[in-house]
Figure: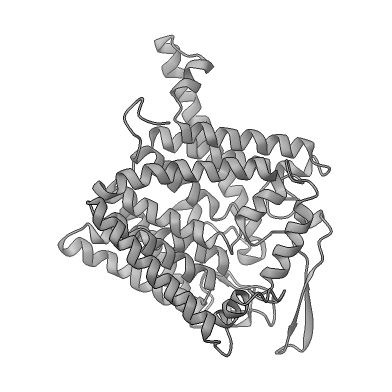
Length: 423
């Protein structure tokens, strides 16, 4: 939330993916090696180290994460694109990056503490990030992140994609907000006095940026994180069930309304058509087309997939969209599923996807048991729900995934049950 979030390299958005990957690799490797060295030093002093004993001490979420990592490496080795699967063919999310995600999760789950210091760092990070975005949304180019002469408003005209802040791609920036905003919101709910007012600043600033970006996946993710965590604010089980029931009825009523009423355009119009069985490939900014292509190819190697980050080499039918403003047909090669769960299935196979989902299920069980009596656990879970919801429409990259895996580790640590009570 500090060095990595704000580091962009020397070439701004032109080389931000490589710059972020290098920073992520250096910081994560330094962390993992330092912790390993300290651990071995302590174990040597105590003369009690053994791999079997270490494995026995791991929690079930940690073991499941290791299983996910093991399957990922098997998928990478068995891939027809080996050794590209180590670093990745297009987005630097090969087996190496995934290994660092899991290693950081394991270490944070073992030693991390979700304390007030981390919360205030998050407050500062979201505030500064949002202020930079707001300045860019006025047309200015601080720090020269856009190429000379360009600004945010040249997106889709002079260059493809939209970029803001120190994250870059607005879809990825929205994913970061989906994790951070619910955490800040529920943290504010458990504070008193001036401290609560301080948290209003990053929330207000981030809300403005989200509305201006208008990334639907981000708005859906934040809404899911805030609403689905709401029942956990009640300590009594009966109250939680009533709250969940009311929310379910309201959701069904909203879906029924969209089913009956057809808005003239936009996301709700697309949802209306989908509810009526019309899966037009252009819906979701082409995501329906991408999902169809990805799923059709994934079933040809269902167990272990094609290897991490190799979709660019898979020969999927490109997505085509006519840009009326430029008067040209835009053609984009598919290198990610724009759905993290489908992306795992395609790249690492159904076995890895099963391990990944089981990890989330295990942590969800812990969260529902601990959140009603612990505000920090509630806030972490809300942020993770937000991220997981936007992941149905988003993409995983080493630019934002480290924040998610760190939050998973903090939740695993904070909600750890008494020894012998987990299964």
